[in-house]
Amino acid sequence: MDRKKIFGIFGGFLAVMLVFTILSRAVSGASMAKVETVKISSGMIEHKVSGSGKVEAGKEIAVYTENGQRVKEICVQEGQSVEEGDTLFRVEMEDLEEQILAAQQELEKMKLQNQDAQSAHSVEAQNRANAKNRAAEDYHQAVTEGDSTVAEAKAAWDQAEAALQNFLAAGPPAPTPAPAPESSPEEPGQTGDDQKPQSEQEGQGENSNEAGGSKLQSEERDKKEQESKLTAPQSEQIDKKEQPKTTGTEPQTDAGDEPGTDPQAEWEAQKAALEQAVAEARSAYETAVSTRAERVKSTARALEDASMQPATDSTARQGEISRQQQELTLNKLLALKEAEGKITAPVRGMVTQIAITTGDFTTNGTAIRIADTSEGNRLVATIDKSDQKYVSKGSPVNISASGSKGKITDYTVSNVAENEQDNTLLDVSIELPEGVLEAGTSAEIEIVQKSKNYNTVLPVQALHEEQNVYYVFIVQEEQGVMGTELVVKRYEVEVLDKNSTNVALAEGMLTGDQDIVKSSSRVIEDGSRVRKM
Image (tube, rainbow, N blue to C red):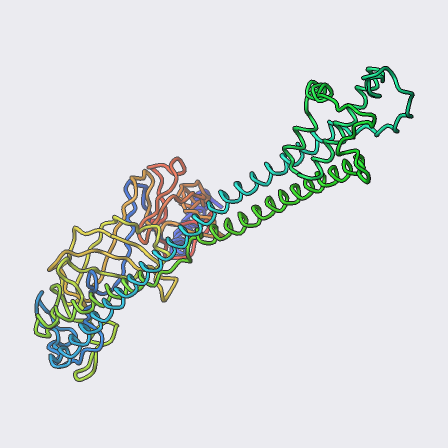
């Protein structure tokens, strides 16, 4: 085979291989996923929270009147706007006049009852004061008289005791000596007594005096004379012995030497009498002390009872309170009469409830409720509780009223609270000035919260999640059999913040020259060959 033929065959082979390569690339390119790529950027993540609700009155005011008034006429309807001072309803004047008269009579009766109670209280207080004064007088009198009686009894006891001691100090009388035997006559002119020795004569004189003294004590029974005679000085007894003596042959005898008189017995009798007097005086003293103690104790208890504070009695105070309440009721009835039975709106607002009926009587409850619009209204909208971290007091809010394309801005959230009917929802309140929106208007809200500026921000479509792990696909060039190819690589990332459109990633995980897959025409995985759209 010549060279020309060999080159021809080789050229045909190369042509066939080229055709197959082109066909293979065409088939391979047709099977590759087409991807759209983006690069990281910087920016903020905005969170938008939406909700809807209704405009409510800023506050409701209850309108009522006195209990038991017959309603003559109702002048408003629910939902009607009223101005301050507009008549809401009227009551029957005839019934009102009767109630005023009854209230006046009841008030006068209460005043009289209070006066009677005050008078009785004054009389009772005066009686207690008099009883206390009398008890004090009785006590002091018992003390004074008792002290005097005890002192007198003590003095009598001391006197009797002194008399007894003085009597005992004098001692009992000496025994009377036996008569001396008769002797022969002495010298003429001398008596028998003159012939006795001097000492014997003195002894006879003393015996005579003691006998005479005993006789006087038994006759007179006088304590003072007894003491004076018992304690007479020895000089008086000597004087008695020196008194002239009678002369004769018979010896001289005193009264105490009379037959039947016993000086010792008289002395014992007098001693017993003095001891009896001491015992009686002591008994009288003890009786006086006991009597004084009992009387002082009795009068002291009476004084203590009279000095006790009376039990608390609030009857007068209760009566005064009832009178004041009755007076207030009467004043309200008189004020209603002065208003000609008209009950008016206290503020500008809207009637939200009417709880009375024409012809019926009013009760203690509310007659009419009015939504006060004089100070503005309040919009209350509900949002999902999952958005709670993006809404707080002071967050700016945009309001769109139903039927209006315009937005109301420049207002902020005034309060965030859990919904009372559904704990998965939150109630967001926005205070609205007067004239912005009427009560009862439906509206929608949008709250936008912006994050800080992030350096790594991607569209949320570029983020993938698997088992709570976030990752992205990055397009890279690789050298293959048939030349350079594009493949994707999986990179795990850390999410800092995201919303429905964008996601912020931690810095340093991606670079600005990398192509991140945003979307793909087919499902891709780590290592898949792709081509850019």
